[in-house]
Amino acid sequence: MLIFAFASCANVLCAQDEKSINDLRDALIALSPRTVDPREATLLSETAHRTSRQCAREYGVTGDPAVHNYLIHIGVKKRGICADYAHDIGAKLKEFRFKTLVLHWGAAWAKESDENNGLVVTAKNQPFIDGIVLDGWRRGGRLFWCAVKDDWEYESGRHGFLGHLGGRARTGITAWKEDLQETALLQPEPTPTPKSQPTRKRKR
Image (cartoon, rainbow, N blue to C red; front, top):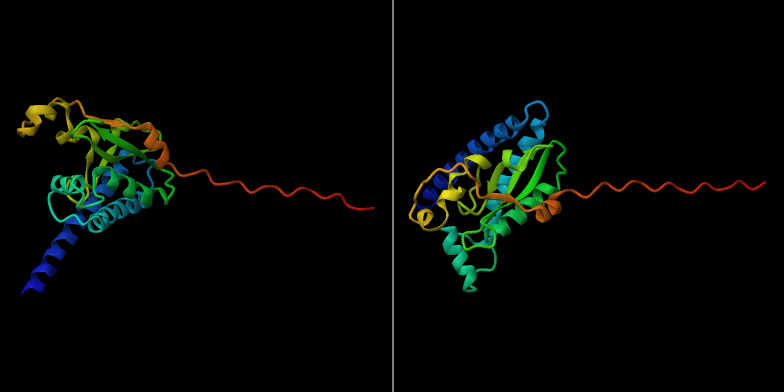
């Protein structure tokens, strides 16, 4: 019975991820239907979802991510804060050297107690604010994603006392800002150009 329960749970998670993978792929293409390569959108979505799950397993996350953060704080766990997810998922995505999609580093309420870090994906030459947030931490390894502008959990009206009480004062003002220094680290290194061989003079 226990094995059956685990298998059923795994199947449900797999089905949830597959739907989310397909939906994110479609959302990425919709960023710029004429320029975004559907193959890149599919690869990014699949990799982000699966890497997020893998990160949670490697970090030993078993429940509420806030509790996991506390365990890191007291030294029981070593990794698994939001920045770890962003770094590790970003490093994996960086390997693919996307040409029609761009990775950005996003920070909400940076350097405050409620700080969250995540990735933001845009189409090429598209502003950060029009991108899609990828957040592995928020749901403990199950990738959360949505448009930056639609992330109501990280609107300015939810910060501070109102936010902690679960207030939903919609302001339309996102707390997500781009960290340009971290964004630069997410960009693939330029492909080295082959050095031309010096021409040898023929001996007469």
